[in-house]
Every structure is written in structure tokens, then in C-alpha cells.
Amino acid sequence: MSLFLEQCFEKMNQGEVVVAYKGNIDADLIANTLSLVEQKLENSDVHNNIRKKLYNVLVEGLQNLYHHVDTPMDDSNDEHIKSNFGIFILNKQEHGFRISTGNFVHKDKVTPIKEKIDKINSLSAEELKEFYKFVLNNQKFSEKGGGGLGLIDMARKTGNKLEYNFFDYNNSYLFFNLTVFINI
Amino acid sequence: MELITIDGTPKTPSVSMNPQTGVIEIKGRSIPENSIEFYKPVVDWLEEYAKGPAPKTVVNVQLEYFNTSSSKCILDVFKKLEVLKKDQNDVVINWYYEEDDEDMLEAGEDYESIIKVPFKMIQIVD
Image (cartoon, rainbow over all chains, first blue to last red; front, side, top):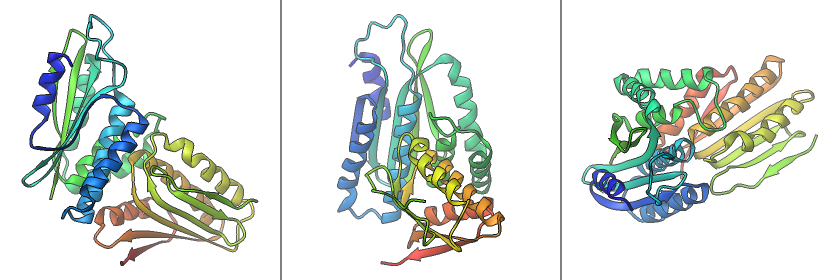
């Protein structure tokens, strides 16, 4: 793995690792990850509704990667960066779980992503509920996703703010890192 | 009209739709990458069913959890039921949720506030 991705990975990794992955994100990987996490939590003392919240947020995070990953095309000599490359880490911390995902995005997408997340973070629980229902009922969905419903859902289910970072990669691409906490 | 049964998978729910009894069931988890593809036969079936529905249509939704792309498709399913209801048919949606699963209860209430069909929230107690 390139030094750049190594550094991103280290920044994303905070706590005890439950699962961590870097590489191609496809449908089988998502299914396998979920069943692995389910197995790991099955006999734990984590409450059932927290577990479901965790699966839900994990699915949204992984499917965001699946649908929205960009691939740096120019001046990249890094043979490890193939299409659909993503990183995700599920950490266990003292007071909860931390899900961190990362993928390349073209620089043109940075502002819309920031605006979307900043808006979500500015809303109260009640406002988030109304915003979710509005997007659900009014926005046209594509095969690719739910018009940002995934991010709203993550914020709503966890009750926490979404954290994000953009790490500069080259002139055209950045590495977008999104982190969500699930309180135990 | 044909009875439809679709077996559940780790990412998709089991579905059964019976045109004679008017009982429709969606059970399990719904987290496919492409929800539109999965729910299309369900939506199509309901459109056909609406032309000659059973005297009473009972829809049982018992989901463990679902992704946001499914949430839109489930709304599409409910919108077909809303049309059925509007045409003076007897329709009820039973929304099941596990004890303590406030997220699933809330999800049902979201739909209830959007769709003009009677909802019954039913808690599953172990």
C-alpha cells in the first residue's frame, strides 16, 4: 500500500480494531463483512438495539463506498489504487463504536459533500427526522443511491455529528474520510 | 393472478403475496445494493392486484433492518397500497418491530405520517 494510503489508514484507525479493510469494495465484500461483524458481536454484551444500529450504519457506510467511489486516473503510479478502492475500519472504544470509511473523490465533489454534511450536522433530532422524511418522499432516487439519505440516516440513528476530513492526494483527487460514532 | 413467494437471502427479505387471501408479507432484512431491482416485481404485482383486490388487504411488514435505498422502495410499495385504499378498498399495514427497537418503530411512524393507509404498530415480544 502506498505511503499516502498508509497514512490515511493510520489516521482513521483509533481504538481496538473489530474489522478493518482496504481494497476493492464489492457486493460480496459487504455481505461478508456484515456477517463477520455479526458473528463477532453475537456473544458480546452489546445490547440488541445497539447492534442493529451498528449494522445499519455499517451497511450505509459500506454502500456509500460501493456506490460513490471515484478512481484517481491521472498522474497516479500507484498500482494499488484500482477501481472501487475503499478503506473502512470499525473500532471499539471505551464508550462506543467508531466507523470510519475512506475513498477517493474528485475535487469537484468536495464542496457538495461538505455542504451536505454541514447541513446535516446543523440540524436537531427533530429537524433531522423531518429532513429525512422530506428527502424520502420528494427526492428522485437513482440506481446509485438515495440522494444523501444514507448520511441523514447515519446522523439520525446515532444521534451524533458526522465527522469528516479530506486528505490531499494530487491536483484532482482527495481522500474523503467519514467517521461516525455509535454510543453504547 | 399468481401467488408470489420470494425466499429471503442475507440481503433481501422473504416476500409472499397472495391474491386470494389479500395477505402480503415482507420479512427479514432488506439491504441490497440495488433495491429498485429487488422491489420491482413487488410493485408490479401490486399494480396488477389493484385491478381486482381481495375484500381486505393485510400487509405484514416485519423487517429486522433495512438500508436507505430500500426505504424508498418500501415507500413505493406503500404508495401502491395508498391507491388501493383511495379506491375504497379495505387495507391495513401491520408494522412489526422488536421490543426496544425504537429505530424500527420510528421508521414505521415515518411511513405512517406520509402514507394515507391505517398502520398498526405491533411490538414483537420474545
